Amino acid sequence: MKKLIILLFSVINLEAIAQPVKSQLYADSTFGWMKIYNNTVVPKPISSEGKTYSTAQLQIANKFQEWMQQSYLPKGGSGEIKKFVNDDATFIENKKALYHSYGAYAKTYTILKKDANGKIVPMTGDGYTWHIRANGIATFSTEVESLSSDEQYYFTLQAVRQDDKTANTQDVESAKLSGFGTHPMLNQYSHFYTSKNNTDAGSFYVVILCQDNKLPWIPITKAEYFQKLEEGINREYQKEIALRTRTKQTDYVERAKDTFKKAMVNLKRLKEKYENQMNEFAALRSNDDPGGYHISNYKNGEPDMFDEKKGYPAFPIYKVPKQTLDKCSSPQPQWIAIYWDPQLHLHESILSNFNFDYVYNYFFDKDKITGPYKPRRSPK
Image (cartoon, rainbow, N blue to C red):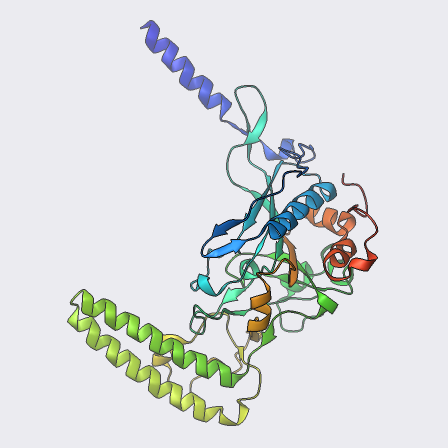
């Protein structure tokens, strides 16, 4: 009986320890960072997913980590910051086509608990984030899977700005939050808001820093779209046939052959429809990828991937040119992507404190650098 009482007491005690801290009680509390980083050890090169990241690249990730901590003080939650390599490719089908991407990732955990020593610690993974990635784009873009291959990543990017005439009202208002759309610190850089309605990953405020502010990605033409779509359909057909043959699913083999035949008939018809527009840029009229086997269901006379649809904005298709991709493995980043969740304190802190000009000059105009990084204002 005594042992049972002790056991029950232990369970109750553990449950009490694990109770989450009520966020509304601590919304204005400043817990700060779980650990402050001052990176002095020279990192060794590492390999991940077939790519090798050099000491120089990992030192850049160290810089991002330090600059973020100097510019932001987590509020209403407990802050953690990590370095990483590889782009966040959770939603990416063709990961081999992605480039050398590395940086730092900060998270403010908002569901907290007291541990056995009474210390406030994260209880769950819930929270809001801030990223700085060299050569990063996968998180805030949407892959066009029917075009992408191991050699090239194709994507759409719904960049909502405050003067956008095609986005919905809520997204346009979000693009204005705290003066983001016309903020004097950002005017010379490409910056936009991405809506969770139009991306796989979620909503972000995005700032892109690149040489001479020339974006590293380019739109593709309809000619390239149809060429890569045909290659993609053939790739998927061969994979499907190989799988169904190996597993002796004869009915599925015949079904795949029929689907492939219909897709190629529709592809030929669409090429003829747009034969005089092949040099125009390709912009999908829905962020759902309509290519691949989906076009086997297209009916003549019905709207296709390029036909205007009421309530749908245009989603241009982009790629990063090969010559730029090849340079991503060098010590010099080809672009810096800075983006964060739409949480008000984080948003206003970055706009007020983070020194975008210093970061741009550090990578793309070294002659203007006269000392170490300093935030525009001290975080609070």
